[in-house]
Image (cartoon, rainbow, N blue to C red; front, side, top):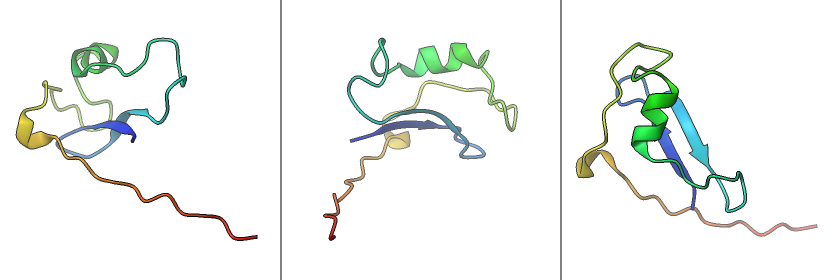
Length: 68
């Protein structure tokens, strides 16, 4: 399951964690993502806040089999 942080206003993807081993640090926290961008979205300039429970959605991704 991927972890994707998006701007609440313009929906720009700010960070995406796709798989274990992607980087040394693992999944970043919302606070870390905010500090990377100086607290503002680089696209629209809106202040980045820690998400509320209503801002979080879980979506299942079905793995498709390959046919050769």
